[in-house]
Each structure stands twice: as C-alpha cells, then as structure tokens.
Image (cartoon, rainbow, N blue to C red; front, side, top):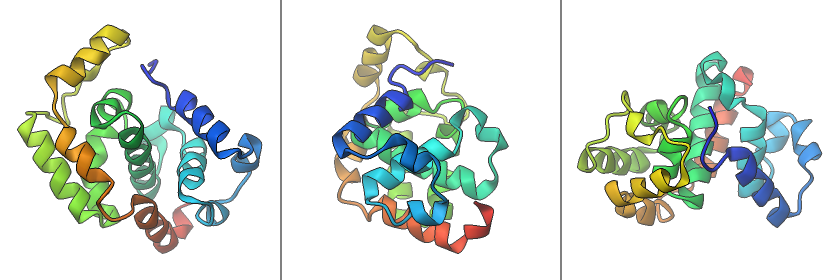
Length: 172
C-alpha cells in the first residue's frame, strides 16, 4: 500500500534537516540508536523496523515501531496522518502500544480523541485513501486538534521509547 505522505519521504526530510547520514543509522545497533538525539533516534528506529512487515515484528518491536511512528506522524501531520499512513499496521495497535510503553497520559488523551471522533481502530477504512484531496478532507471530518495540540506537552515519547528498549533489549 502506498502512503499519502510516506514515511520514507518524512525520513528523508528529517535526515536532511538533521544533517545526519542515512547509511550511518541503517547499520547501527539498537543500543547505539537510543543514544542518538530524539529526532534521529525516531528515524533510525523506523528505518530498522520494517513497517511493511508489521505482523512479523515481535511484541516489543511492534510497541517501539508504533510509538516511534506516532511520534513522527503526529509532530509532522497530526493524528489523521498517523491513522492514514499506519492504518494497516501500527494504528490499530496504538492504544495497546501506549499502555505497554507506559505512556498513560498519551493513552488517556488518545482514547478520548478516538471516542470523540467515533474512530474504531479495528475499522480504519475511512482513512484508506491515496488521493491527496480525499486525504485533506479527512482533516475536515476528523478533529484531533486537542490531541495534536496537547501531544507536545505530554511526557517525552522518545524517553519512554528509550526506557522500554532498555527494559526489553533482548527483543531487539
């Protein structure tokens, strides 16, 4: 499935802004990745964990991929973008991942936003679009502004990811 705003495009943008080497992160071990600055760590983790094979990831890898994708997508284009781009993988798993990573405030806010927008994570067919106009209409239909606005004031997702990885290092 092609994503409207692909993760690869976002990764390239972040990498060009951060001025870091794509090849340098591909060959890194996870214990090295968690020492990177936040943005670079998120990109490196997403590059290592294959979103096209989400079902093939182990439980800890799914948690980290989902949290990293949420972090990048919400800060880039909001929750609508996360749900659209990750509808076949991480999005249906987001609440479970937030709980497992210890992101209780993120989880409470996400559950509230999903309920207010009547979004069922088991049926994200409304977010299945490859057309830019249809994608932009999702922002008119779904209102995640409160979640997106509050997201940056929540505890650091990269720090929660680091702590989770350290506690589950053998799974990587």
